[in-house]
Length: 168
Image 1 (tube, helix red, strand yellow):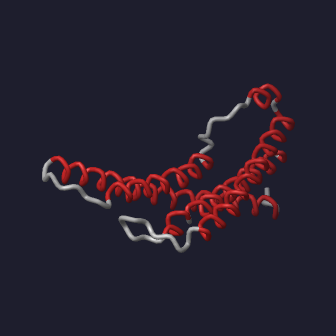
Image 2 (cartoon, rainbow, N blue to C red):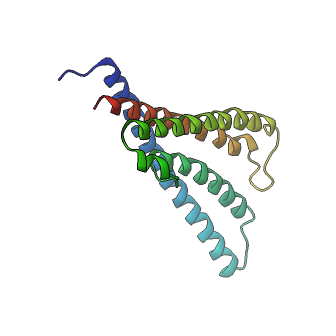
């Protein structure tokens, strides 16, 4: 059976979402490894060498922020966020699909707010410098709109897949 243009679009969007998610997962592996190394180095320096790394706590905190927001996009793509599916699990078929699409649409609206307000906040702190690392704070806050865009991509892919499932 030949694939329709809508089917190709859904497949392409889902494929892009999948590939971007794979890249983000690899980035999370790097960030997680970096955080482990920074914290381990701090423990070693503090308790073995009796010298504290003044920058390690700040760097670990910033890495944790990036891990949290990027990890949220991976969890959304994997459908791993907790949800209440009391109604959709009992309905089945088209009504359940409509509820899932509605939930993704509401989530996408919130992700849009994260992009807009996250970008505004990153712009607001653009002139601030972190105390220990001397890093511009907009770099740290850039994760807000970035994760919002990733979440919107995954939501669009989920909506497209749900919409395309109606034809099956």
